[in-house]
Every structure is written in C-alpha cells, then in structure tokens.
Image (cartoon, rainbow, N blue to C red; front, side):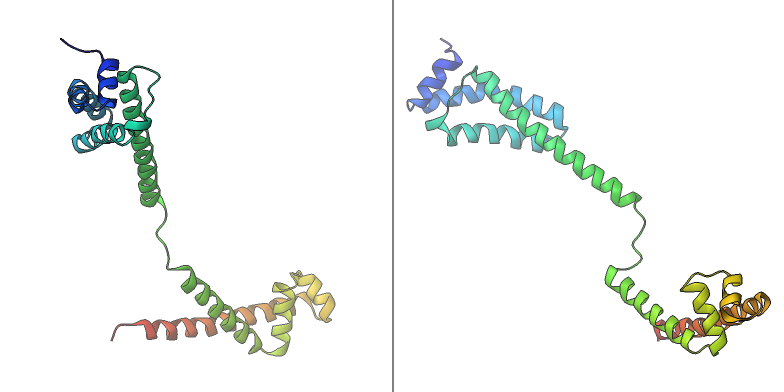
Length: 190
C-alpha cells in the first residue's frame, strides 16, 4: 500500500526514518531533472537536491508545511535555482564588463605621482622662461586672457605677445621633451 505524502511526512516526524526515505525516492529524481533542466549542470543540480533534503532533515522538529510536500520541495528547489541563475547573471555581466573596459594604464597611485611630477617639472620650466615670456605665458594660460588683453595690460603690441607665446611654448616643449627622454632612459632595461 502506498501512503500519501502527508502520512509519510507525519510518520517521519514521529521517528519513522523509512518514511523520509520513501519521500526522498518519490521526489529526488523529479527534482534532479528539473534542476538540471534549469541549470544545465549535473553537479549543481545534484547539489541543490541534496540541499533541499538536508534542509528538511535539519528542520524536522520545526518544519511546518502549509502546502503539499511536493509543492514545498519544488519551491525550495526553485528558490535555489533562481539564486544560482541570478549569481550566474551577475558573474556574466562582470565578465563582459571586464572584457569591454579599457585596459588600465597603471595603478592610480602611479598615475597620481606621475601627474604630480610632471606638474612640478612644468612649473620649474615656466620659472626658467625669460621674464617677459613668463609673464605673457601666465597671463594667457593661468588668467586665460586673450592676446589683445595681454597686450593692453602689458603695454606691448599683440604681435609682441604672439612672439613671446611662441618662444615660451617652444622653450617649454624643448625642456619637457628632454625631461621625458631622460625619464625614459631610466626606465630602459639594462
């Protein structure tokens, strides 16, 4: 005679271990098929079915099933599968992000120090400019004045302002190129 799930559940809770084994045999294969169908991974499917039945064993004394046993175990399995699929989706999105993001140009500390060093070298190079070139350059770049405004403020012609800017930029480029070449030489393998 075949007992109903509710009778088997009641007998198991009363201490009849064979009742639990019958429930396991009745649903384990169905659960395994469903888990495999949803995950596509046999090992994960087995693990989820084992977890469902282990949880039943652990919660035996306080287990309350308000639906059918079948609905209870399938819901428990469904929750595990949904969590698994959610984690897989997040993992996949992260992998896509990692593959599509630009390669890092070095760590942030190195970038910060390089930028700070370059700023310091630029400041030194500006201080090395002849006085009039330096004044015109700073008015143009730091105060963002036009050539006409610089000419009016300095009492020189616009043409002279342009000559000072060309000279300043040429000297700065030359000085910074030497610095970059020297820095590069230090980085060459021996």
